[in-house]
Image 1 (cartoon, rainbow, N blue to C red):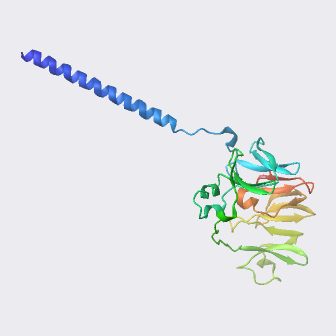
Image 2 (image 1 turned 30 degrees about the vertical axis):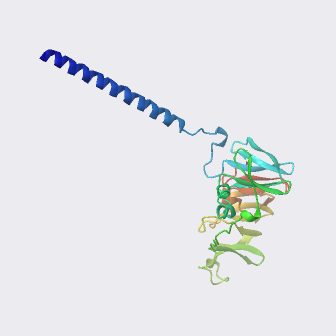
Image 3 (image 1 turned 45 degrees about the vertical axis):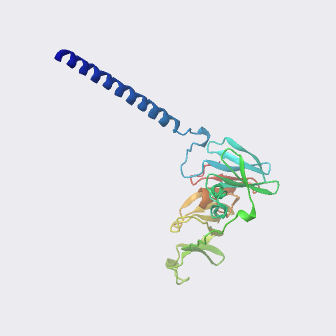
Length: 252
């Protein structure tokens, strides 16, 4: 009788262990399946070669604008009269209409089509039509430049406001006046700004040490926010057709 009881106990333990093992396997399978579902699909067209610039870059064709990726592939056709970078829109981010705040994120870009302004996503879909009543107030943010252009004898140089006192002493200049034109671009690094410079009637980019960053080979470089927003410069070689280059002078 004792042997029979022992056999029954062992049989029950074996069945119970098998049931637990089966249940655990099912749980693990469900967990694995759930984990697989949460893996995001990567869009190969948006993979960056250069991490410092946007995945999608504005381009122009026959007077209209669209977007290409870093490999030069057209992602959004040139159908717009004007486009901006995929970046935040503070008016929408601060909107009193909570339903439109998401369209102010950097996942969207502002474009103009037939006189109307929209936000589009990275597939080119127009997801929001601007409505003035939706626009909130942007917080006031002002950072004074540390450096400024200085003209002496019709030549441009650079001074650092806190250190400049005497124009007759060349040591007070960060860059002694020697250029036809200088313009300090807006950027996040106030101590090391990028500077549009003109020499021998050609445009290039220098830094505050006078080092040439972009060679003097362009007809014009736009004074806009492309460096601050996208770390790109908008340039032209013929005075008409503008395109973007990065800090290594690679064209897009």
